[in-house]
Length: 232
Image (cartoon, rainbow, N blue to C red):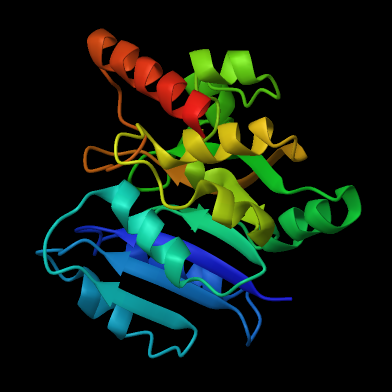
């Protein structure tokens, strides 16, 4: 059994070191971290290289493609039986991998999601729950999830059996986490929603994912997702 952690990075030199350490400390020797760097202009790649850890597989884009492409590339390279998604600027709690893997094994889950503690860039607590802070509670209902995405990729993991159903991500997919959850629902795969807070979810001005959208953008996203979902 192998775990692949898939991370997309872009100008994350300030935070990526702490995140990688929090991940590597709880992985086994046969696990891997696939990092796709989206042509960073800061020291992100240098920080990653300093780890000199053979479990890290770094892929460097020669041009900027955005985070959805980065995660898709990482998932394409991943060899693991279980795939964890990771942002570059969070910090995983030491029990995250164990707790999620327990849900996979004991509850026969295909997708596992959890909660997190919201912090600012210095890891000072902002809210005890991302679900509370964002008003984005993961739902098991396809209709509710189509209307509002309650799934956050940084707090999501899934088994390899789902991978060929979600890849390649459609070109117009609004967010990868939304797509993964809906495809799992469409194929009646078991999703386990854990109440556990298993990471610090760092929010700051430079966040690439999880940013707020304007109303017309949100409406367009929902229309696109419905169209893609029907065709999936």
